[in-house]
Amino acid sequence: MKTKSTLELADVQKILAASTATAVQKGWAVSIAIVDDGGHLLALQRLDGAAPISAYIATEKARTAALGRRESGAYEKMINEGRYSFLSVPQLNALLEGGAPIVVDGQVAGAVGVSGVKSTEDLQVVKSGIESLGSQ
Image (cartoon, rainbow, N blue to C red; front, side, top):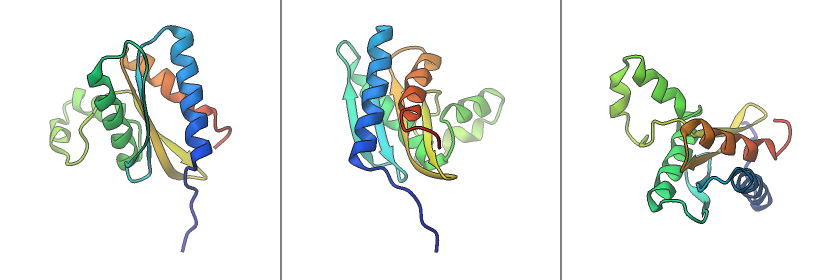
């Protein structure tokens, strides 16, 4: 039997604080979602000025990254390269850049998703949150 790390409330708060600080510092109105390894929502924050739909998209990007065990943008890339069958994958509803798994000791402990600005900027916010946990 294997042992794996799980996100605790303090971890979630740290990720959310770092992600929020990055978005605020850059003036980006985004929504930030954090999920566990099964894609269940642990935290959601919609910053002032973020569109309501961004909360849904951020959550789905995080869920896609957690369940797929890879950045959500990997699916976008596959689809853009002609693998259209990925459009029918069940339970993965945001096949867009802006979600990334939180990997601890080689195991996915959860994921972060961000929506509200360009997808590359969303990913910057995601990565700043994950990096706040230190080396993984």
